[in-house]
Image 1 (cartoon, helix red, strand yellow):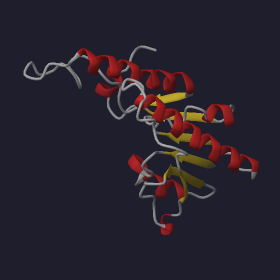
Image 2 (image 1 turned 180 degrees about the vertical axis):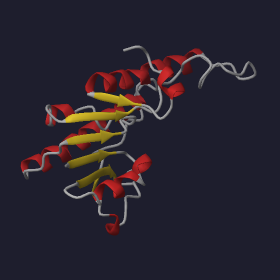
Image 3 (image 1 turned 45 degrees about the horizontal axis):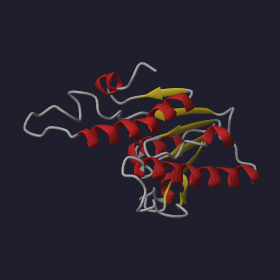
Length: 178
């Protein structure tokens, strides 16, 4: 089994699972993380590779779109790294990823037939969750509009994966029916 784990801050939530999987007979675990990620030590049995964004988000970008531009840059960096790995003969059996920063936007373009499982931790802006829950701190229209725009990434993530998991039922309930 070739398992590819993608997380901006690799290993992130997979810190304990990745080394356990790497110790299973016949399993090869590869991690991808941003150049700022802590990674795992070699004795974990997990090989991991850092990716780097080719540029920062433009400072003049509309503030509703800054997170989306960042997501595209993350997705582009990961796709370029995956294309390089594919040219060298690498093909995972399954990809497990935290898609919250955009890393998996183009994964299915590189590996269309590989099962992609997303760890969908959060869907923003649901009443009573992360906004509008405290009357003392009302949420502005701009904040709500920015969150709605940011959720476009999460909707794309749901469309792009073969399976989506959440840590808790409550977090699952924050996501739209789609």
